[in-house]
Image (cartoon, rainbow, N blue to C red; front, side, top):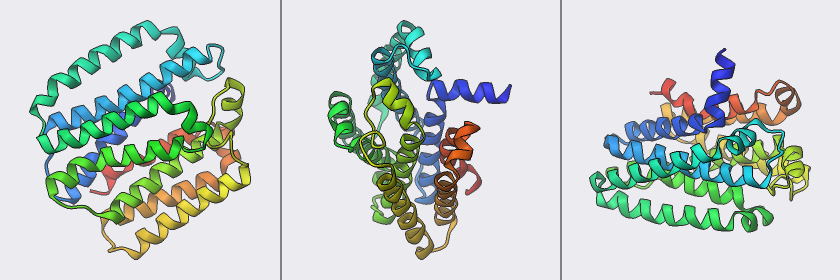
Length: 261
């Protein structure tokens, strides 16, 4: 029953939204700032909006996909399109209550997200899609903590970017065959497997090194834990894919900050 409930949350990208909100709270607590509820709402709603639009478009491209996420989005595309419109209106209505500095930064990220949706195929063909998404995701999570705290921590930005990038590369590796079958381009489908595994390993090793060499606090301990989990995902890929556990574990990493506060 719980596995089905979590699968439903995954299909609708609710787990991604929760992860983004948890991370925002985690870094806000770390930098001792308190974003308004509107900032939390706009971040979560924006993440859901981008992922849902992306999945709806992919579902149209691959109506016969074997993946339940795309079958669901194809079957209920009218309802989801209506939901996208409602969420978009809700986001616009809450923008008035957001700090203008965050609003300016968020506008830039919204523009860059639009560029991604327009150029997704070209970015994917150049093996840049996952890199681009990771940069926008990282900037979106850390925008409010950095602006409100009037601080910029390159090490924190780099750690979250490396974690996000590793996440997307790992998932791309796990779903390479499905992407090829559905006609989707990803970093795994346009790269040699060994080379991709090397890049993932370098990102994990670099992230672990930065975290271990940083001041040992709850934040760095979280990153050490997260990168170790991703190392396990990389080295136990076949075992985890057969049991369809990689998404549960991979996306669950972004929810674990609740235990590091």
